[in-house]
Length: 194
Ligand code: GAR
Image (cartoon, rainbow, N blue to C red; front, side, top):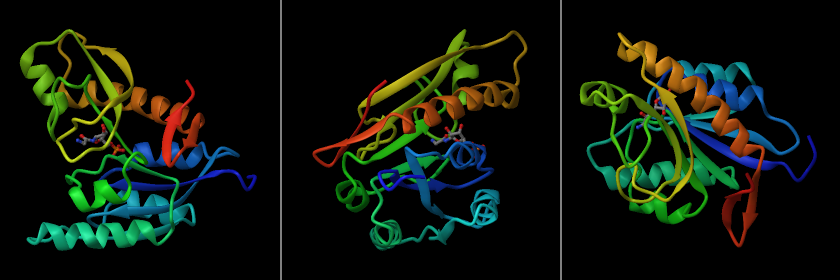
């Protein structure tokens, strides 16, 4: 890996298959320096297995205090880019401001349709025939930041939430890795030459 590799911090909450794809596809363009989770979860173990530094910052009743701890944890590696990949907590204004233009999120729907924690279930309940995934900049809203890239995934007859989500996650893994391989910093903002 050359010195110009972008330093990436990844936020995750669960299984961590997106994190694994990000880690497995590190090359000269980026390297994962930190994984932050809000709970002990398989994603943390995946990071440890890869020799990557981890931090667990459990959610607190005092959201401002939690956000400050999240800022401190991520700032400890001074990353070029923060990737929320299966992180199920809403980042607050302190975090968004600190890493503005450098924090992106991958979400399992074609935003602005179906924001929130149950995007795949909501899409199925709505009866859509096509859904997909979105990578967007993180702002202080719920999955409302500027859209960077999207991929469509067809809903198949009889799809369960699990089956559809697995196909969406395959698209998410390909999309986020592709974007990270094309990330550039311009005036403190990360942009993607795709
Ligand atoms: C992904 O589908 C990601 O978009 C979603 O959680 C999954 C994580 O999968 N995130 C959200 O829904 C955030 N609103 P993984 O744990 O296998 O990487």
